[in-house]
Image (cartoon, rainbow, N blue to C red):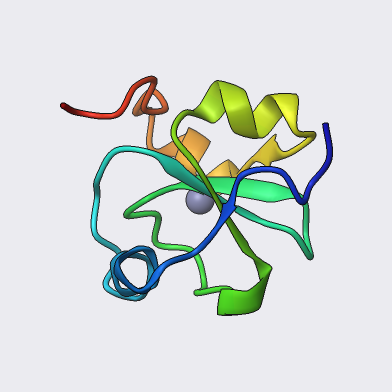
Length: 83
Ligand SMILES: [Zn+2]
């Protein structure tokens, strides 16, 4: 597993990151090795560095560490994609 796992951000993923839309899944930032919930108030990363994962566990398996701002919100990471 590597930081380049997951998939590239599509247009909708990018819009959701830009708009800080809280939705299922997490996004990793390959340049920092950090992953965030969608809706995280952290600074918007560059689109080319984004990797999209369906669940936090997958991002962690790829070697990402959880963003501290997400963790501090006290909201558990999304664990599955809504149907
Ligand atoms: Zn975050």
